[in-house]
Image (tube, rainbow, N blue to C red; front, side, top):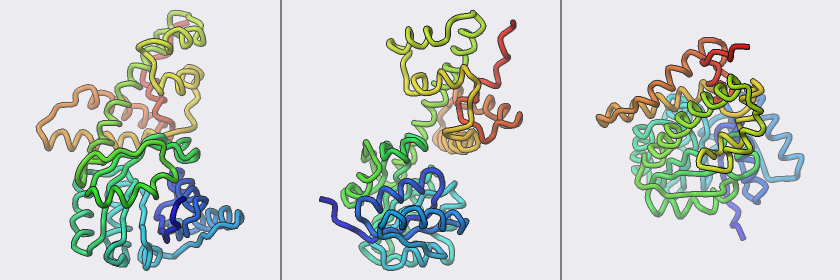
Amino acid sequence: MTTAKRIAFLGLGVMGAPMAGHLARRGHRVTAYNRTSARAAEWLERYSGEGLDVATAPSPAEAAAEQEVVITCVGNDSDLAEVVLAEGGALAAMTAGALFIDHTTVSPAIARRIAAEAAERGVLALDAPVSGGQAGAENGKLAVMCGGSLRAMESARPVLDAYSARTVHIGEAGAGQACKAVNQICISGVLAGLSEGVRFAQGAGLDMDRVLEAISGGAAQSWQMENRWPTTAAGEFDFGFAIDWMRKDLAIALGEAKSRGLSLPVTALVDQFYAQVQADGGARQDTSALIRHLPEPRT
């Protein structure tokens, strides 16, 4: 049985809002903060309406005060620094022995910085980016990749269980974020191949459903194929993980690779293709809109 904890959750976007809701449904007392107060009010109305122990706070520091666990799920490095490290941020309000968990996809560098500053305050810290998208968050089936001490990891597991299907401790601080970069590198390559496969099948005049039936049972099978082949073929991109966010993540991966003297030629090329789609109005479309950089088949 899960022991109820006092938890602050900072960031109620398409991922954070359902994750915070899962925590409340597990019996935790959840105090939420969101930069847009209207979204926080909507979240509070929804989950308080279920009779759950939820509240909101007007600032990160006020949300984090006297909490056992503080969780963030925001946008990027600067957003994370603002809600955690800046004046009025969460970390200064946390007490020794508390646990900090970050689910934002950010650079390993800021994850290591937060871990170091948390350690000075006696706070445990875990960088824990997630994979699984909005559907994974809503269904409580996310994959979580974690960086931090073993003590932080073991303290976090009962909390993460509320919305994760798989949680893996990768290594020390920053390792979770480096692992998320690997995840995005792999996804970008798969989506590039999927896009070209769909276009080729269309150009060859093949039955798209039958092609999917044939190849999804073999070595070409992937999550992207199973979930995005039909919608990509239909030109439907108004869901899932936006290109803006993928490009942010790929910039992290490419920057980290450069700092380590590594080459990611395929990732760099796919990022250029995404830039084309972004410039053509696809910034908020799902990452499967990568196919838009390819010409339509001749009729």
